[in-house]
Image 1 (cartoon, helix red, strand yellow):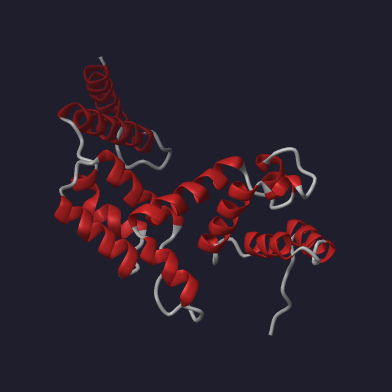
Image 2: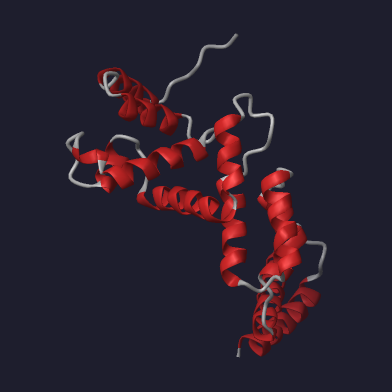
Length: 213
């Protein structure tokens, strides 16, 4: 079995866990932060508890953000995403939280933060009908569907684009493809003759000018 490689941050957090081992809440939250990718829901629940109780003041930190940055090595944006996702599940799908608490062997899927965020945003936008939202929640929270699958199946229903947005997206795709073509035909090994390349370049220039005005 290979030796586990510890990063500097891992080592710092491990040392801190030993130093505060007499405080179960503090050491437990540190352990969850170290195992963040696997236990994000547990970490989010611990952070929610700490914010409600103001525990960081007992540990000598001036505010919650300082505690998260200096002790847990978590950025403010990450913490807000963790708390936002957890609070959404509390309201919209408490069964997921309960399942995470009771399923010791992780036999049932725990949705990723990205998956929860997709469902949260779809709920807030409110464009999808109730049947579609039920399908989204079922796939995300009960079947273990990843965010890439959710986007492929439900993005157009949950986040429909206006006519203007569709045109802007298409315009951007055409411009990017045109610039890529221009770059390729100018390569030293390009099989396109210089005369034809110049003609294509002129046409691409006209195309870009027409769609960007």
